Image (cartoon, rainbow, N blue to C red; front, side, top):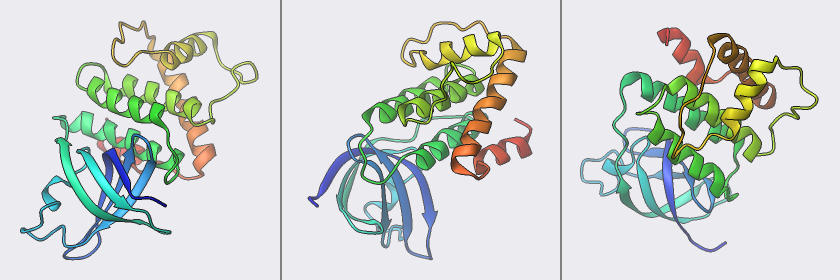
Length: 211
């Protein structure tokens, strides 16, 4: 496989030992990519400082069977400035993106949704933005429900459709009833749990924080 050169958003960073980082990104044309950054924790590392959660990078990678090899990285944009609540909700979006996508499988639609939703987090209710993102992600990846076959109250269904077609760049205003939002949120999270068969760590963390 040829060398990968692509724009990507960092969606997870793990410390592997005292020197290295293991990084998961979602790229514009190559989907999910994962790589080890050897020596990235050393203060002299040229790439370590830019391998931050939600940084947008230009990557050069050598594809591998288990993970890719980092050949080079350039910072395109630093992580967005988010408050604690916004950052907690952003972690839900990046976790579901990682869970519902595959290595080296292009999905430019999801990449665009992710970037635009992260920007919108600073302008709109993050709970609503994240729910809309999850709905769009489910349909973009082929896991969206058949609305003709699923039982859903009328108000929740109308809200579902509004979020499915929400323009993250020019979102306008949504009329949302609390009961509809709660019902829809429960249904979408159940769908996600059914598909990945595990609780979302980021959602557990949100609940522990009482957000």
